[in-house]
Image (cartoon, rainbow, N blue to C red; front, side):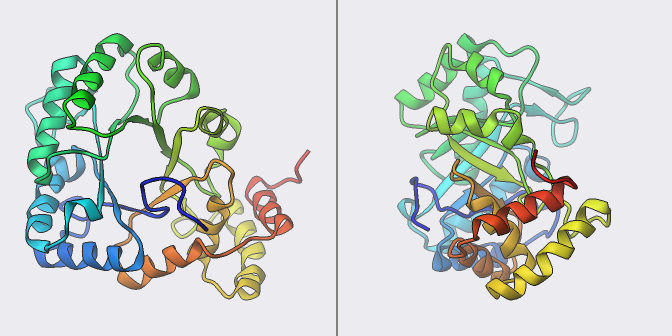
Length: 290
């Protein structure tokens, strides 16, 4: 499956690399980065809030010592969520004034030890968003080369359209998996296809390995013979199902296990037959397509 953007088709998500999860050492982070690049994962996804505002800096320190050339990787990060942990806030909230967006981008640049961000996303929509204010910040960052692309995460098509009254939006990162189908039906992926926006999926394996429910049991029943048919494991099949969508979705995977990273990349080589794709969809929904 050919690469369709400047970003690797499988993206490595750094949310749990630091204090929010695996607490990787600098040496371990370097190894994960280098292994990712070696097997074709060159894009790393961050947000300022990860690790309560600490994981970007941990990654940046590892990156500086990794010997990896900046031009060989792509860095994505996000801003807009204000947490009470890691900052002096009374309440969790969203903030999207011009000065804050620019300040946040510059903080991420400093922490990630880089001169530019390949993609800068507004993390979650706020009821108080003002498109012109956000556009002024983005345009300033784009013009001075501090960000290469401006996008959003978890935005609805109407929220993207509102923002686009003031500035082009190059991508949308949303929750999408075989157990969470909303972006296929709420217009999100239609919007990405129609407007050539890069679609990214966080939590691409969904709850399949986390929860036992009627939905996951139905999926398991359909998946077992398909895993044998395609000679793949369950996680690969779940990714292959996403990768077949015409929005050319980039799954953001959270694993730092080297073997699982390799398997994820190989998922892009699986050509799911049409009826197998629909068999999995039907299993997820619990009913035939209308």
